[in-house]
Each structure stands twice: as C-alpha cells, then as structure tokens.
Length: 220
Image 1 (tube, helix red, strand yellow):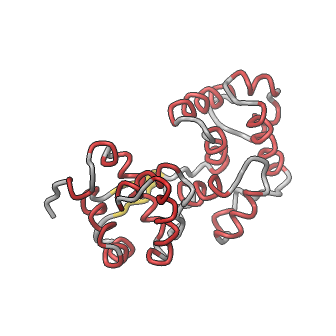
Image 2 (tube, helix red, strand yellow):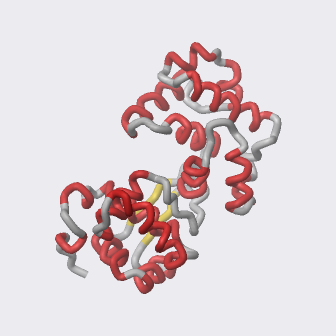
C-alpha cells in the first residue's frame, strides 16, 4: 500500500466526527486527504533521524545529499561502508552519523527486522526501533504513521500536531500537549486520523491564516 486516503465516508473518520464536534469542523474544512506512505522502511527511519531537531527544508536538503552520496538509494551497505567524514560532509552531525551507523548495523545482524516489521504489533515495532541509538518515541511513532500507516497512533510530542491542536481548541501554548492527552481516550481506536488531520491543518495554512476554525467558510 503506497497511499493512504482519508475521506468523510470512512468509518474511522465518521467515528471521530461523531465523537468530537470540534475535530469534525477541521475534517470538513480540510476535506479528503491522501498520505503517501514511505514504503522503503530503511530510508524512512534514516529520514526521520536526519530530521530530528532541524527544519523540514534543512532535513530535506541533507537527506537528498545523503541519498546522492549513497548512489541514489539508502542502503545498509552504503551507510556502513562510507566513512564518518563522508557522512558528515552531506550535513549530518557526528551524533547523527553514529545513529545511522547503529541503525545499519542492527539491520545487518537482524536485530531490527525491517523486512517483516509490518507483521509486528505497534508495541513490538516501537520496542525494536527504540533499541537503536538516537531513536526515541517520536521517531518510532513517525514510522508507525508514515511507513506502516497504523490506525491508532497520536504523536503527542510532535510540535506540528501540538501547534494545530492549540489553534483548533483555542488553548494556551502550555496547554496544547495537555489537550491532546486529555482527548486520547475519546479518539481511540482511530487516533492516527487525528494526527493526519492536525498535520493537514498546518499544511493547508489554516493555523497561520485563520484565527479560529470557525473563521473558515465551508460548504458541506
């Protein structure tokens, strides 16, 4: 499955709309959305490591240079055979060089089973990934959402999701993580839908262009 499509007709989307009238306003305003899943699992994890604590544009530039260095494709062999200096020359920090090398080593010895990882539960996937240096809960959640397309993952610590939730529910910055935690039981077992629609609120410019969700005129 290369793409994940969410529409108002989906059972999970309807479930969220029925349970949360405010989230329904966002779903109606955003409309149907399509998510391109990262089916190259190794490249997906590397991309997330590269993107840690830097801007999206900077991460994209570094990742593209890394991909070019490795001959157009992220491979275990490429990561292991290139020197630290070569990897740093594309923009990786020494720490991130250590992270991608550790990732490649664990894949090479089958300590991390990326080939069959879609067969594992969310908990098992998280456990395997977090065992890699530099991979924490956020990176593991990004993999569950953006590579495996799992249906019940809410990345509470993601800054974009927090920003969108702050805007959507009209809370203060200090409360934006709390509002997500508070609503976790409400959205279960379709919390990934919430993650994707909150990201869409950022992508469509709603958060920056409109004071509140009620300022957006929508024809249902």
